[in-house]
Image: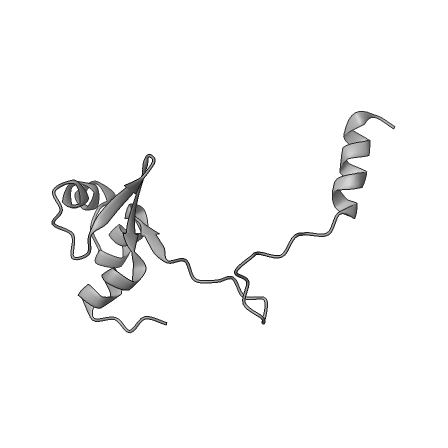
Length: 86
């Protein structure tokens, strides 16, 4: 048995860990933030236009950076757009 076979055999034998915030029915939890690409889809804008708005602080909800990634609070965006948050 080669190393790859050993790793495959043992990897499939391990159970998948449960997500820490998993719902009792097994559904994936809703994320609390959107990426700028997701915001672009929601607003019907290009990703570049949303990035420019995030940098100039003109999005309907504030955007913030985490490392290299820009995020927008889901609750804040929904409030700004008048969407009922689930």
